[in-house]
Image (cartoon, rainbow, N blue to C red; front, side, top):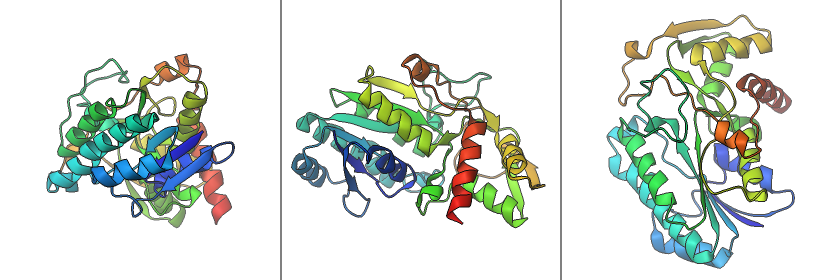
Length: 286
């Protein structure tokens, strides 16, 4: 397959390109190579590439800044997705897009499934939900919801995830501020990329899938596990979400169930296993 990847040098994009490179032809398109907010440029570039699959890893992910820059968030996360979906459709290509847990309120006590109705609480979340809807403009589409992505730095991406910052603090002996009440299902980019490839190669039914590592944890529990596996006594500063002034609200309980993905034959490793492999990759780059 010929795979056209936008945002190819970002955290997830780097993992996607690396995952598909063996056995497939990858057309890697960095943010500076293609402005996805320009419908004409998107249409021309994808038509010229003649891909079998278009994978969108480009996004405006600054949650708090989106409150003041709503137009930018909407142009990239919503209308840019629409342009890509339509260009993929015109090329006869499958379209793959990535969503977020932020589309939910976080007012629950069990992992969200694909059947749960979104109710975004921030500008960023609204822009991402619109992108979810626009992705379906392509006749054949996969919408993969991820959350708390990490691991791109171990593949060479310059992006520093929340897990990277916590790991940096632990290894350097600094205090790490971590939430004790925000619950997530971390997503290791290596596993997300592998699952994306398997969905396409298996020709799995198109649609919405939650693509996260198995299980869930608070950020405090994640930091404890990371330090335990690294063999370091961490300096953790626990905080509650309500105690931190953030420009945009976050869903407090945002764990996602990946049962639908497993039913399609794609089992995701636990988040603890993902942390172990992340640490191994991080160490190998030092």
